[in-house]
Length: 224
Image 1 (cartoon, helix red, strand yellow):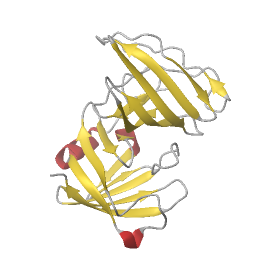
Image 2 (cartoon, helix red, strand yellow):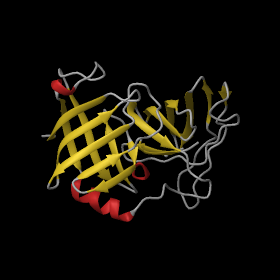
Image 3 (cartoon, helix red, strand yellow):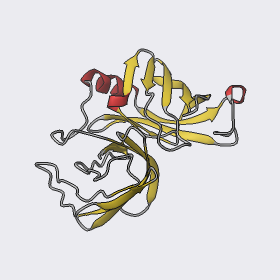
Image 4 (cartoon, one colour):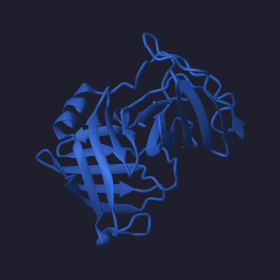
């Protein structure tokens, strides 16, 4: 497995720490799998200990040491076996959602179109999303709170926040809209697709599609 950004399998997380080379012994469909090693990326200065954990009924939990710090993940695995999403424990606390994608052992990072990186760099920022009550088909989201969403470019373009984390390989840019997914379903409370619509370089509306197909529309405002 591997996860890339928000928290690489390649992982999308805040800051984009990316473990690589984690594999399951029984695959995503087995009743229980052990993620028993973590390969250090060639040329990396990081020192990691073996990755240990398990997958039970589609839920993956694993941990490893890097330098003197312990990292851990608590994730849901897609039935396709190529994506995970859930919480990640950084140096001091849990945060998320994060996303992990499968990468080839020969890759050091997830590939992406450089034009996408340019587009996202021009549109990056942090936003507060408010649910449009007239669009809500269910109770997955509430009008009583706002939802954070950030767009950024680290080693790769990425989206992260309360609606999930997504890597550049899951995005497509066609001005003025950034389309994410659909991705394989993981956590039942996270969207599988997003549409981000911009006015000039400012995000103004987001549509989130849930695993069962419900669509929620949010208005966006830059985070103060």
